[in-house]
Image (tube, rainbow, N blue to C red; front, side, top):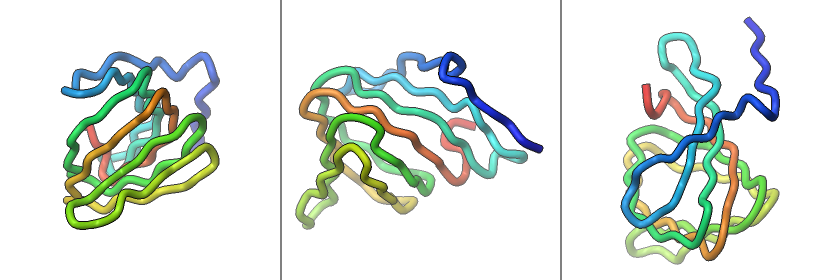
Length: 111
């Protein structure tokens, strides 16, 4: 199977999470919910606590964000950076203005 998502098919929708104004979409969900691929957009300055119950690889398309794990220095991500967050990781995500990223999760995070 091959699937293509056009720019006008991203269908970002508001996602209710304390501390952030964010919208997400997952236009690709793999067979058996083994993975999902989509977009996350933080629309304004945000700070949220998030525990990942899935593995995630993400690519920064626009903007900047910082991810901090307890007892570690924060990691800065800017446009063009690729990141990985392991399942079970508890984080504090800080977005100073706006950020837009492509994410791939295993398994699908909202299935």
